Length: 297
Image 1 (cartoon, helix red, strand yellow):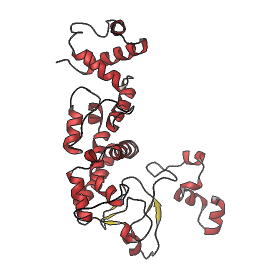
Image 2 (cartoon, rainbow, N blue to C red; image 1 turned 90 degrees about the horizontal axis):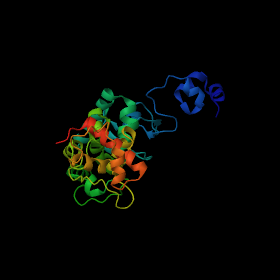
Image 3 (spheres, rainbow, N blue to C red; image 1 turned 120 degrees about the vertical axis):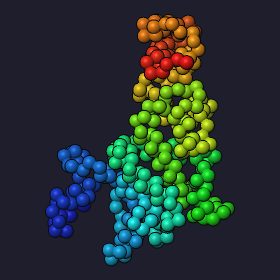
Image 4 (cartoon, rainbow, N blue to C red; image 1 turned 45 degrees about the horizontal axis):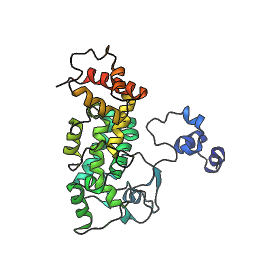
């Protein structure tokens, strides 16, 4: 329904309606409106906490657009992050889940520290996608199993897209979000591809103890975190993950010791070891980047 017609029917000014219902606006109108920090139109439709709406005398479900941090009603300790429509039982009781409640507060602290865009539209989005693509033996740590036992008891069996799966995973996803949102840890991620690095050690300590670093492509695809690091490498330095790994082997071998790597014709050396012209340039660029950022042992 057009905004002018809705305004005539409701008696609410058209400008007020446009700010309240962004879907009424065109892309040009949205560009001129002060809506920073609000959910994008048609994104994140969710059901408000049933206990909150009942307290205000509303007997029906209230549908609204939510930001990614609005997955828990902290007042009533309810999980509202899964887009389920139905009775209040679909909104999980978190009164016995302090880790999930703590993760919600941590999520908000990350936003205050790094900003809505960096946390929700980049770090949290990537963390959730990486966690979902990890195999269960990595993603489902002891904390995850403990939270699932609180929800279901021993011997539980739940579909992977179930609400309790999402809720039990939330603390891990926020822990990974912390790493991906931090400029320090984001810079540490692609620093070395040959051995467990600071980033991987911190990830095992705080997110997934069973994580195994594997920067190969056995089936034509990188492991999810390796794929993310590959993207970071390409944005920072240009080379692909495989190029960067091979460049690091050459750089740390000692064969280039004593050379001015920024002046020496590394491209010619790479050609002599069998690399194509394009790959020689990529390897040389990666080695020069390492010479600037990584002292050799």
